Image 1: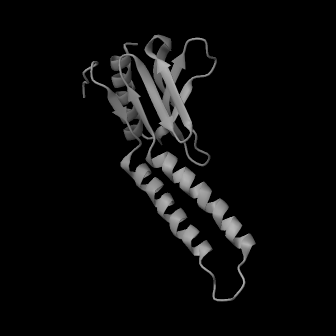
Image 2: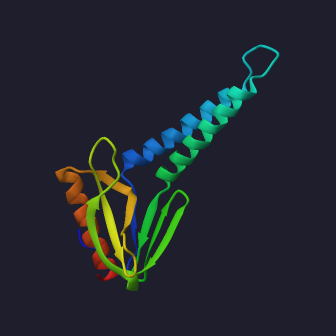
Amino acid sequence: MTVDPREPLLLRPPLAYRAAGWGFVLFGSFFGLSGVVQDGSDSYDWGAGAMMGVLVGLSLGFGISISTAKATVNSSAIRYEYGFVRRAIPSSEVESVAVGPGSGLYYPRICLHIDQRGRDRPLRLLALQRPDTAKGRAVLEETAANVRATVGV
């Protein structure tokens, strides 16, 4: 698939990841509602309510960050949004775009690595990572080629 370098390129996680993120949001919402409702006795267990609140906050934060993650690539910059991480990399600072290792504790993952001038480590677009399979690598290699064409590296 060839892309027009003048048009912005929108990169999102796979549909299954976004659906899992919204699943976390629903789980956190329903679990949080169950922490608010009393169990029928006259007293309220504030400790359990507080722990449910912490779990709700974690699951909502994780779910929203996965489901709303995106990278917008145009000829002037790469803008990456993932949870609280917001990065804008000007095209003049991009040295290379490659496929490299991602973060996976129990199974291998791959993601896009963006090398920048003046930085020791590349920016890893973890929200866009995929399993390290032939299909996943082919999809990410095509995405990396499209990013290179759009940025002009």
